[in-house]
Amino acid sequence: MKKILLLLSIFFIGVCKVDAQIEVIADGRLQTIIEQHITYNEIARTVPGYRIRVGVFTGAGSKQKAFDLRDELISNFPNVRSYVFFDEPNFTVKCGDYLTKLDAFSFFNKIKGAYSSATLIRDYINFPVISNDDLVLPEYYEEGDDSETE
Image (cartoon, rainbow, N blue to C red):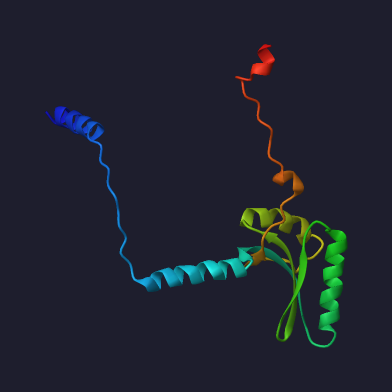
């Protein structure tokens, strides 16, 4: 009996077509908040991700040491972006812009041998660079192409 009721209910759901309209009634301040959120996200060009902290320097000559380390990273790893951040009183050298921890960990294993103080940290990163190859749309072949049959 339950099977028959189940089949009948499925049948009626399939036969009955429901055409509904939804009207959203909301406070005008909600639209203002949404617009502010969109504007903020257009201005903020960072996303949560991962970086590798290579060194932290404090004291006399710390700025020069940090920039020297950054230049060394750029020469050793030219495809990875390197940064110097100043958070008083420290100069911190970080490299990489990785969306996932797995991506960051693969580079972290490479760099850990040369820089023993390197640590993997969660940070706000710049948008990853897209190569020109990623911007090219692939060409598609359609089986129903008339030029092949002629």
